[in-house]
Image (cartoon, rainbow, N blue to C red; front, side, top):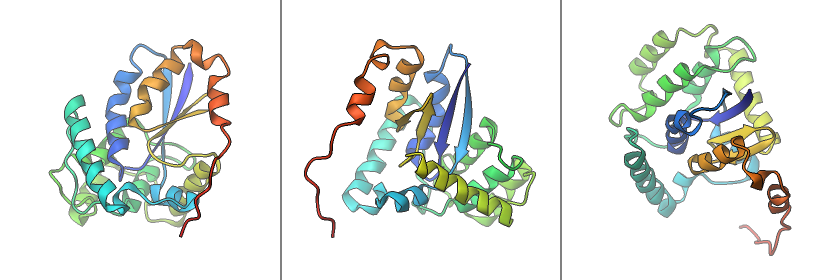
Length: 216
């Protein structure tokens, strides 16, 4: 049985779309999925990147694209307001549903994602709704405690150190697959496609850098 690590942050609509599509992408395979919460903002800070919503033309394109992708795959998606929002409370709650070092189960992640993307544009951090979500999830640990806060920070740092640069990222057998549109590639690898047996994967990743821009 193969194991997949699914790195996610519910702030990302692509993470929601990939999460919804994952069972179909893995249909018929014997796999275990570990859902790993982290903070996208921490990854962006580590790699010196801006998020899609921080570049105005890209922001508009992102929202249009995810709306189209959602209707294409039959997934409900309604942009929350505001977006981006601060996902700290949700990710801490996700970790608090598990013992230290554990990962939340699919039901927990599903409830978190739907809290963001399936509530007709409601603010994910609205206190009454957050409290109701916490009641439903019945966390084992204090989401606001120092242990959970430190653990979320450590998981984000560990993911960045392992080369994770965005969400969703799915890692299987040492290979990282980034984005909702990488699910077919992941499936091909799991099916044993010949391309993955040869040098193509490693060779493509060794492409030397070309001209370097001087960032302002």
